[in-house]
Image 1: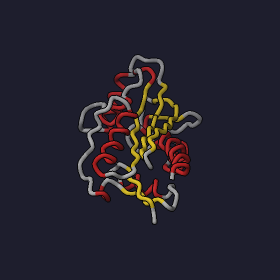
Image 2 (image 1 turned 90 degrees about the vertical axis):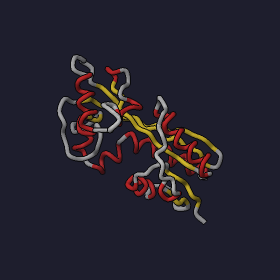
Image 3 (image 1 turned 30 degrees about the horizontal axis):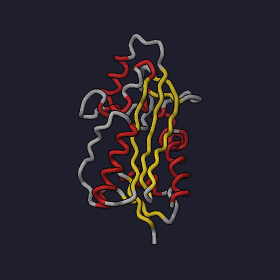
Length: 194
């Protein structure tokens, strides 16, 4: 019998992507699969807190083993902003275009354009709690390039590349990204826990 593991997301694409990576003895469930239709409020002040809030909510309310992720863009010259507020940097409507414009405005007179994307995965599986982190360094550019990706991808060039995340394409991005690195660590840990 397969072990059920909840990925605390409403995003079916994330579920599909991760289902292909988890061990075959694990059945990955989304929030929809467990009839959790409410938005879990992310009121933490760090990526770690937000990921843990989601995990604790599912574990306490539904009793399932669970993991959750949270990601953000951390710009060095902006003291790590937008960070945990990346999705709603320019307001609660989570507008990608406005978020990018705000980053550009705040970087106007700054020489340093370096930044990193960071993903945190929090998990509570078989009574064991753990955190995994993935990050990728890069540079913010002053123009949008590329049609792929989402969020800040069109203005972020990862180290070792000359194209933005939005230009690199899904296959390369999914191999080198902060999220890919965090999930690689998570899957290694998962194999030791289950």
